Amino acid sequence: MPIKIILHKDRCNGHARCVRKAPDVYRLDERGFIGSAPETVPAELEDQAIAGAGACPEEAIEIVQS
Amino acid sequence: MEQKNPGAVSSPACPFSAETQEKILHHFDHHSSLYRDHSAEALKLLRDQAPVAKTDAHGGFYVLTRYQDVLEAARDDERFCSFWGITIPTNKAPWDRAQTIPIDLDPPYNELFRDMMLPLFTPKAIDAYGVFLRQTATKLVDAFIEKGEADLARDFGSPLTALFTMELAGIDHAQADFYASTIQYGIAHPGDPDALARMAEARGRVSREVAAQKDNPRSGGLIDYLFKARVGGRPLMDWEIEAIVWLVLLGGVDSTQATISNMAVHLSDHPELKQRLIEHPDSWDDAVEEYLRLVTPQQGLSRTVTRETSLGGVELQRGDRVLMSWQAANLDESVFPNPNEIVLDRKNKRHLAFGIGKHRCMGSNIGRLEVLIALEQLLTRIPDFKVKAGEAELSADIGTVKAYKKVPITFTPGKRSA
Image 1 (spheres, one colour):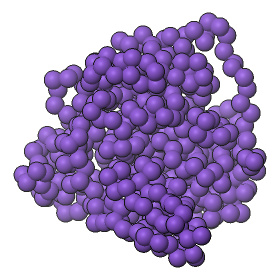
Image 2 (tube, rainbow over the protein chains, first blue to last red):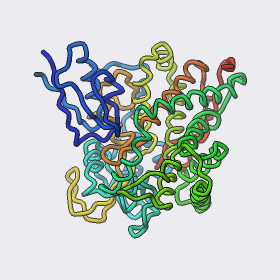
Image 3 (cartoon, rainbow over the protein chains, first blue to last red):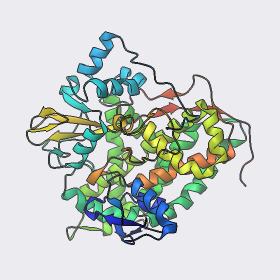
Image 4 (tube, chains in turn yellow, brown):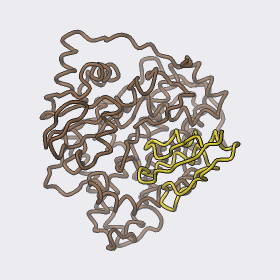
């Protein structure tokens, strides 16, 4: 079942842990805060996407089954 | 099933006498020798029996030891403010202007300064610092690798982080030892008159540095950056620049070298874990996170309650002070099972070693990189290093930063890199 990423940008404080764990999924803006992520995740990037979300100390990234 | 790890340490039942338990539960003092020698056990006793415990030490405060309570306080700057001082005891009076910026400020003011500084701390900027850090780390190991012994604190962790902090700040590298030794001493002897005098001297030197660079600009580095920067559309005042540089020095020269020493001591005590890491460089990132969690270098910071509220079921009044123990939160077994072990494949990476929320440590990813590079050097160049039995010496006071004064090691001599 494919997964979907929901970003809660208001919770982000720029720790940048998501890109460390999932450089192919998450993009930071010029301040180093979460910029973007694909809404639906290609199967081969699912593990990365989940690891990146799990690494966010602010719980700003939510993964849902779509 | 939780995987057993070679880094396992047994966690005994409560090791304290009734009298000592009473002392911890009602008179907790993170600056005491009791805390220095038994911090994890003391924090566990508090978490199990009084997670929002009132103590009469240092004029009275509450100590938070559950992950959820620490998280709640750190995230709510309106109820738990920073401006009345972020350490216990504090030497900042409510009417003093900020001594360290942005950390002393509350939102939205801290964000003005934080946002101005963020470009210095993006992942891209940090990748560039990695070049300097690797070269410096290599040279430092070169200086002792042929001898077969060293003091990892004095010869490696401290100069590595101090030289980088000078580089980042834009201060002559020759000042690294002065700032590092003075600040480490000051943090390890809070309230001691001699330590306060030495800290005042270092702080005075920052003012002179900023003034000197105003007359003779030094390109590159934080001070130069701050001269050109704007907050709220205006240039920074000199005292604001000094308060920022002072914070970068305080944050740069102690807590990360502390993590490097803490990690080295633990690795020396856990040869199977060390061997596993030598064989699996892909788990070094995870090891760094686990070391930050297990031995949180900056042990905790405080906030002041701004209005009547409750936290963890305890009623708090305006003006009450709370100590958010990052260390206790990071050892909360309801969040991190087997909290006293290094568990490399632990899924939950949400430790609070760098704080959380709008005051989270801006240098967090620099600190991580420094610890990673230190780990690389230790495991690849002196992999059989061992701490001399009984010779690693903790700081006199670990209430602010859990650091080692000395980490004497021996190892099979190796070759210099060039």
